[in-house]
Length: 173
Image 1 (cartoon, helix red, strand yellow):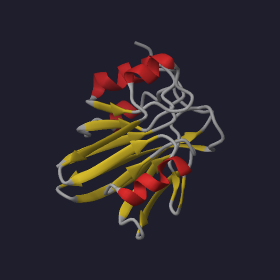
Image 2 (tube, rainbow, N blue to C red):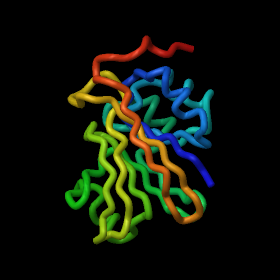
Image 3 (cartoon, helix red, strand yellow):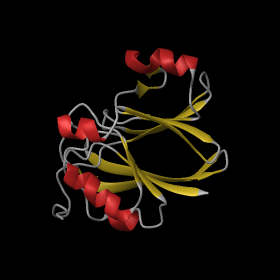
Image 4 (cartoon, rainbow, N blue to C red):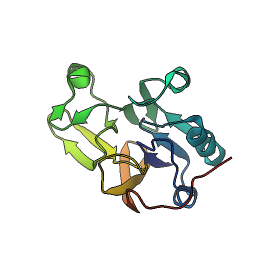
């Protein structure tokens, strides 16, 4: 059994309260638009990190983190990418791959809209944790927490961090 903390679109700012929210997690997953290495370095101090780069990430971040991650946790096949669209309107860049080889759990960021939805056509769960950072068009900052137990996903929580522009001071190393 693994407890996962899922975030996206930090855009270079990490709410320090996340350390407490992710304390009971086994891993942290970041679905892109990290912003800078300060964010990932801090997250790696807390827990093991799986991360992908997003469209705003610079060359250094793109060298350190891939555009896509496919892996299996317990019995759940996972695919994390930044720009994925949403059910049933997936981004053209992933649509054919999803039809050919859909994971059990498809995670993306980019939209800044928190959404969890089961896609019955592809028989997979879609997750977008929304945006965690203070920049973008979202009104509310959000993250997700959930458990993978064998082939089951359970105990899903949406954590609301407050309005986009609000928050505690930057986390610095």
